[in-house]
Image: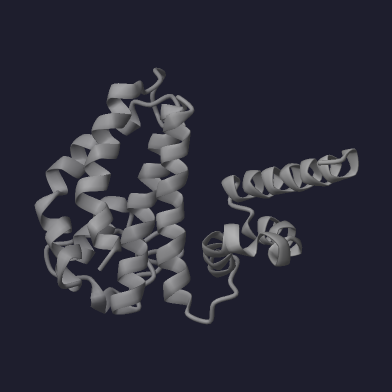
Length: 207
């Protein structure tokens, strides 16, 4: 190719790289804004990615579809952090994935917002303490307890069957320097946690 052609190819590579970097920072709008510019030229190479990115950026009218895809996008982001050796960052994203999945399931199947759970929707055996504003809020464990009681199917099976493992994994996460501890999580810690997420939680997202 001539010098002008090479310059053009490098400009495209630079912009696509910047777009993917924005995507990696969850700035889906910025990423789509850049890649849309190249859709006519790169559509056959990036078609599936552009479709996915459009949903993440809110161009799909189905909010539930977007939420499910955002959860999966968070999982892929966690895996990329692990590949980079940033295991604490990967675990932090995995923890958020657990929390967000429970929130999504409760909203999707019961219209329940974990930041303000209606008192008449709190099942017996689950204790939530009202905050200063009188709102009943469900943290990660309580949210999964609600899922196990109020939601049916694979989500309920996960909530009931994996509760002890969830506690064990979160206990390890809480010792992370990015949580409440002072030591970083290593590769083995991520492999154990990430492997459990992939085997036990990911199937819930796919139903």
